[in-house]
Length: 91
Image (cartoon, rainbow, N blue to C red; front, side):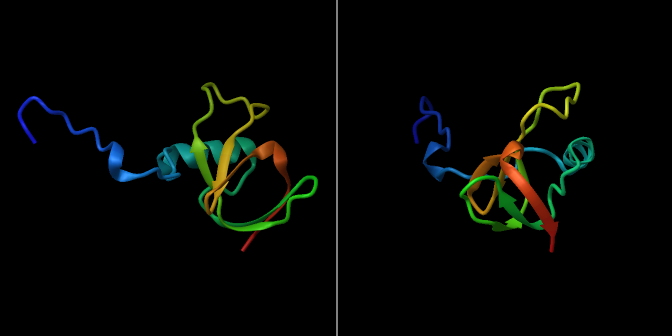
């Protein structure tokens, strides 16, 4: 790579890794009453079937916390909102 070129790492692929540090995640988990960072089975409203895995927060909500604000969550690559959850069980 020459001195004038800048490597941005855009060829590394897309990753749905959590972007929220654990302390912040735990605070948000308490405010929304969700088991973020824990292994769970989640059932969804409507026709979707249940999914099992670690419940991750994909994007931090606005501060100050408002538990009525929807959260972007994910399990094993499936992205969904907390409003789509019918029920969850810790495993």
